[in-house]
Image (cartoon, rainbow, N blue to C red; front, side, top):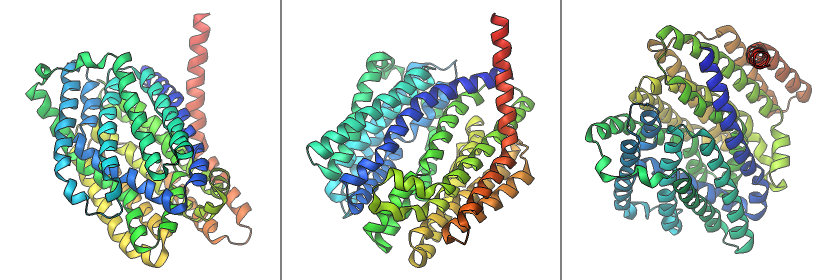
Length: 472
């Protein structure tokens, strides 16, 4: 068990160095984006990239999930895994080309459709290479690639937006060029071409990988519906200006999504092992309670500083965007917890249940968006997203007990959730003395959830000192 915790910590640190540094650079660029792009242009740029992200699971057939899940199994032939991944992407992309006449009917996207298709192709191939490097266990290269790709994106952003004045086109093109360079660099450093061979296409392995990956297409699309479809509703029911504000506000909770994503990447590697059922349950319980404590503390902290974040990271014309952050960050927090529960389905290769639970959340989200956006605007969309993620987490938490029984600290969980709801309410209403109330709420969350974090830190720190003493 000690080795598993050490491995999880080590991988998390490596991913943190690569992912955190790269994502933080992008986060700080938001000030630049909001200065060079109008609220309408920023909203449309966000809409284009998110539309491309909807098409990527179709082009990849979600095979990237199969690459990491099957590539981590030591007995599997890595050449077979990589070759199946590449061929699947090209077959999926050919199918996507057939949909071109249909997509051309979407007026907002039609002028940028060629760019979207190019984005999908480069991003799909980059994801295959990126995840395969991770599956090979080359986590340092995996992390460094994230930094490299981000730096390239930023450099080309400045070149295309400020240098060539390409606006929306330049914003999207910078991502395309960065992904293409990432593919080239990974191929050279990790010698990826030698892992590709049509002769390595094993039908049995292909069926297993596709059987695992196919349900995740719908799961990924439904995840997009929950997190991103509200932008289309806001664009059509409200205005491009409000969409731009909402797009900026949705970037703030990425602080938490970022930290969670780093952990989940390391967590997926650590869960796939030969431990007994009892050891797995203890592992999930111990890590799950620490993870939940961290997520709730981050939710409370982001709500408290939501106005400050917008003031620092966005142009003054976007300041109103803070109003959408409290509800969005609660939704993002439960999305993080839901992803943790989904790791049980990944471990058990039950991707069908990942799909079913996300479909339920997506249906709820669409219905709630239709009902809430007309009267409440963008905050109605934020509330719809929050409710959908909470529901999805609860469904997964209950259903997944048949595989791994996580022993949550229920009282702490419920009390903390209620405090977060009240904190959100006081922030949005700006009640009398709302600042001390917000600070007190945040401190209460820290006190309630801090024990697990302190114990985890002490446990890891004591092990570090023990190893250091024995080396001496």
